[in-house]
Image 1: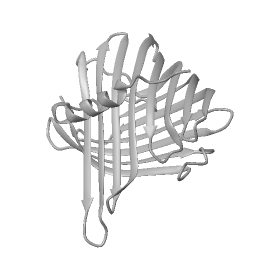
Image 2: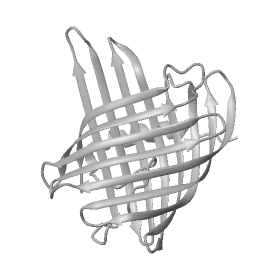
Image 3: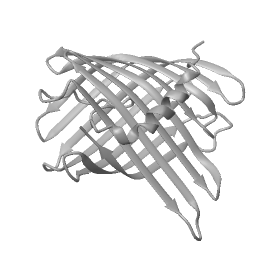
Image 4: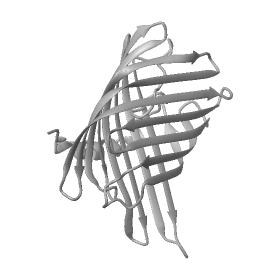
Length: 254
């Protein structure tokens, strides 16, 4: 059985602590089919996204969203390490607590084709899982590569280990597919629409991500995003089949 190293959560917290020191590279993802960096891409790049909201008065709640990634572009390879965290509390009680750590590898095959592989660890409170470990390999193709529109799709087989809150362990073979569409609206704004699905014998986990990014200056940008995650058959201990996150966050880039 696969078990994540005890240091994974500590690594996530350390990376989040460094968020103000990172900057953005918008092409990195562990769920979707991100396009390759262009010829002007730096050998090393990073992305950091930080959002926070606090409501007080008749409603008391706090939401913290943090994402950071580091990428190395060594053609034909692209290596990406990513960390995410989300914490939501209402009236002093935690309602969402989610962490993710993962590594993604991409190898360009030429003619807009590429091979990829990823390894991902997730932990989400109230989801019915103590944690999940997923590994996927496959092939992708870039259907649109113009300066204004970019569209990539990818698919492949994978494996997932589920540590269920009730004390059970499950091992699954899965089929994965994903798409990533990006529209450069202007020199300072960009629209993104992404979708992925991971199907096993017992359930299908699908994710949809929609975002609009507007540059403030050369280093900072504002992102408005909406994300939907659905599990068709979650464990009995899960609070819901569908989670949604709507966020306004700041990106810092170099």
